[in-house]
Image: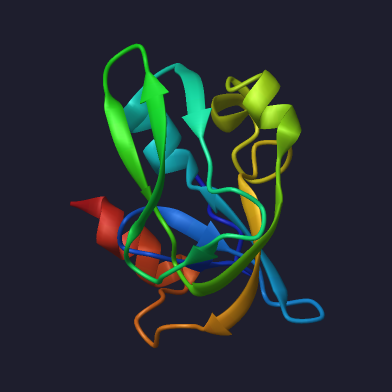
Length: 125
Protein backbone atom coordinates (compact mmCIF):
# COMPACT_ATOMS: atom_id res chain seq x y z
CA UNK A 1 0.00 0.00 0.00
CA UNK A 2 1.34 3.38 -0.93
CA UNK A 3 0.25 6.52 0.88
CA UNK A 4 0.34 9.70 -1.22
CA UNK A 5 3.47 11.69 -0.38
CA UNK A 6 1.75 15.10 -0.59
CA UNK A 7 -0.63 14.32 2.31
CA UNK A 8 -0.10 14.58 6.07
CA UNK A 9 -1.34 11.82 8.38
CA UNK A 10 -2.57 11.48 11.95
CA UNK A 11 -1.71 8.59 14.24
CA UNK A 12 -5.47 7.90 14.33
CA UNK A 13 -5.31 7.08 10.57
CA UNK A 14 -6.80 10.23 9.02
CA UNK A 15 -5.17 12.05 6.10
CA UNK A 16 -5.13 15.77 5.37
CA UNK A 17 -4.38 17.78 2.25
CA UNK A 18 -2.31 20.93 2.32
CA UNK A 19 -4.58 23.92 2.91
CA UNK A 20 -5.82 25.57 -0.28
CA UNK A 21 -7.20 29.04 0.53
CA UNK A 22 -7.12 27.93 4.17
CA UNK A 23 -9.25 24.81 3.54
CA UNK A 24 -7.99 21.22 3.82
CA UNK A 25 -9.68 17.95 2.88
CA UNK A 26 -9.85 15.09 5.42
CA UNK A 27 -10.30 11.37 4.87
CA UNK A 28 -9.21 8.07 6.36
CA UNK A 29 -6.24 6.10 5.11
CA UNK A 30 -6.33 2.91 3.09
CA UNK A 31 -4.81 1.17 6.13
CA UNK A 32 -7.79 2.26 8.26
CA UNK A 33 -10.33 1.42 5.54
CA UNK A 34 -8.88 -2.09 5.23
CA UNK A 35 -8.88 -2.58 9.01
CA UNK A 36 -12.52 -1.45 9.25
CA UNK A 37 -13.79 -3.78 6.55
CA UNK A 38 -16.80 -2.83 4.45
CA UNK A 39 -17.97 0.63 5.55
CA UNK A 40 -21.79 0.76 5.55
CA UNK A 41 -22.52 4.10 7.28
CA UNK A 42 -20.72 7.39 7.93
CA UNK A 43 -21.65 10.06 10.44
CA UNK A 44 -19.81 13.26 9.53
CA UNK A 45 -19.62 16.62 11.28
CA UNK A 46 -22.18 19.19 10.14
CA UNK A 47 -21.21 22.02 7.81
CA UNK A 48 -20.55 25.08 9.97
CA UNK A 49 -19.60 23.05 13.03
CA UNK A 50 -16.22 23.38 14.70
CA UNK A 51 -13.86 20.41 14.98
CA UNK A 52 -10.88 20.15 17.30
CA UNK A 53 -7.60 18.40 16.49
CA UNK A 54 -7.43 14.97 18.09
CA UNK A 55 -11.08 14.92 19.13
CA UNK A 56 -13.95 12.80 17.83
CA UNK A 57 -16.01 14.45 15.10
CA UNK A 58 -17.96 11.53 13.64
CA UNK A 59 -18.22 7.78 13.24
CA UNK A 60 -17.60 5.13 10.61
CA UNK A 61 -19.68 1.98 10.84
CA UNK A 62 -18.57 -1.18 9.10
CA UNK A 63 -19.77 -4.75 8.99
CA UNK A 64 -17.17 -5.42 11.71
CA UNK A 65 -17.50 -2.48 14.12
CA UNK A 66 -18.15 1.19 14.75
CA UNK A 67 -15.07 3.43 14.87
CA UNK A 68 -14.68 7.04 15.90
CA UNK A 69 -13.55 9.59 13.35
CA UNK A 70 -11.01 12.06 14.70
CA UNK A 71 -10.22 15.44 13.24
CA UNK A 72 -6.52 15.86 12.44
CA UNK A 73 -6.82 19.67 12.72
CA UNK A 74 -8.97 22.33 14.38
CA UNK A 75 -11.30 24.51 12.36
CA UNK A 76 -14.72 25.00 10.81
CA UNK A 77 -16.27 22.35 8.59
CA UNK A 78 -16.99 23.92 5.19
CA UNK A 79 -18.22 20.87 3.25
CA UNK A 80 -19.06 17.20 3.71
CA UNK A 81 -18.81 14.59 0.99
CA UNK A 82 -22.46 13.83 0.22
CA UNK A 83 -21.33 11.09 -2.21
CA UNK A 84 -19.78 9.13 0.64
CA UNK A 85 -22.87 9.67 2.81
CA UNK A 86 -24.98 8.16 -0.01
CA UNK A 87 -22.43 5.42 -0.80
CA UNK A 88 -20.17 4.70 2.21
CA UNK A 89 -18.33 1.99 0.24
CA UNK A 90 -16.36 4.83 -1.42
CA UNK A 91 -14.33 4.96 1.81
CA UNK A 92 -13.07 1.45 0.97
CA UNK A 93 -12.83 1.68 -2.81
CA UNK A 94 -11.26 5.15 -3.11
CA UNK A 95 -10.02 6.36 0.31
CA UNK A 96 -7.74 9.02 -1.20
CA UNK A 97 -10.03 10.17 -4.01
CA UNK A 98 -13.84 9.90 -4.00
CA UNK A 99 -13.92 8.59 -0.43
CA UNK A 100 -12.80 11.85 1.23
CA UNK A 101 -14.98 12.79 4.20
CA UNK A 102 -15.06 16.53 4.88
CA UNK A 103 -13.34 19.85 4.27
CA UNK A 104 -12.26 22.16 7.06
CA UNK A 105 -11.11 25.79 7.24
CA UNK A 106 -8.01 25.17 9.36
CA UNK A 107 -7.44 27.35 12.42
CA UNK A 108 -4.82 25.12 14.05
CA UNK A 109 -2.68 22.30 12.67
CA UNK A 110 -0.88 20.23 15.29
CA UNK A 111 2.85 19.72 14.94
CA UNK A 112 2.59 15.93 15.31
CA UNK A 113 1.07 15.18 11.90
CA UNK A 114 3.12 12.59 10.03
CA UNK A 115 4.64 12.49 6.56
CA UNK A 116 3.76 9.52 4.34
CA UNK A 117 7.03 7.79 5.26
CA UNK A 118 6.45 8.40 8.98
CA UNK A 119 2.91 7.07 8.69
CA UNK A 120 4.17 3.95 6.86
CA UNK A 121 6.60 3.37 9.75
CA UNK A 122 3.78 3.97 12.27
CA UNK A 123 1.59 1.29 10.65
CA UNK A 124 4.37 -1.20 9.87
CA UNK A 125 4.19 -2.86 13.29
